[in-house]
Length: 333
Ligand code: PHE
Image 1 (cartoon, rainbow, N blue to C red):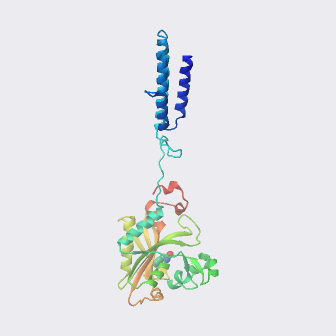
Image 2 (image 1 turned 90 degrees about the vertical axis):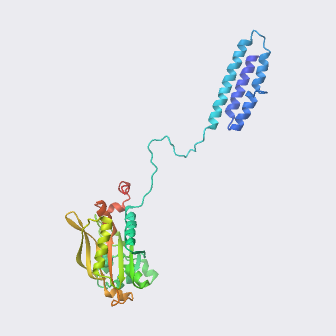
Image 3 (image 1 turned 135 degrees about the horizontal axis):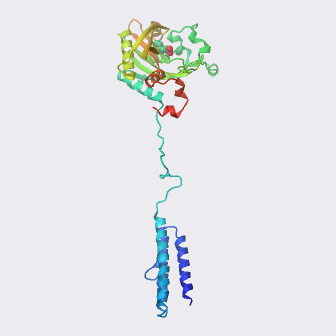
């Protein structure tokens, strides 16, 4: 028998079997078959080695040891490889530099809305909600806005063509959140103390401070002793809570069909004043329209622009930033 060939055969078979093992159990079988101390193939080779004539034995023994080392080492390497934890192809590659997982945030306007609601609930105002598609009663008529008032011009509102099909009078996207005053008073007896924040729509020319969709916070307080002083106190406290204690506010005479008297509410900015909304004492005609008695209760109402406040606090110059989804802007909040 050619001993060299026997050794080579052993090595080839062992190496092939090691490479073919795909898990620890298979690899263990290979170990027992080839390298097993008691009856493996290596043990058989050793027996053969014992029969070699004494003068050849050192050289053959050296060859035997070499093969044994090569196979043992291949087996150990395979074992390490099979033991290594498997990483799924889709898993995050931890060796890549500097990748931060993106975390989402609330939109700056949503953050402002949440804060407004939180401040106003501290003052005891409940939060109400209402539809964005309105009828003329809630958007105009009950608010004492007559038919010939310029605010009712179809060109100044988003009337819906589908409303005619649905029946029940013209519908429009609400142009103001004052609709909520009517909806709340229709459904409740006084006293009432609510705010409502939502979108309103006007076909305005879009510029740095105007958009055809924007958010308002409507406030309404009705009860036996509600006065202009209550209105001024609430608005000043609100502005101080959001913009800081040192804020300066101003009330300017104005006109709205649904408040009498009416005011514009301004906040000082630099050398000038920024108009943040309208307000006033609820007009007796509005109280009557919802079935309240103007001799028993009085109330104030206000409507503030959400974005204006947010722009003022963060020194944002252009209202379009809120709607352009530019991460360089959004990530700053
Ligand atoms: N609805 C008015 C507007 O959109 C604001 C307002 C609300 C004024 C409540 C007075 C009272 O301009």
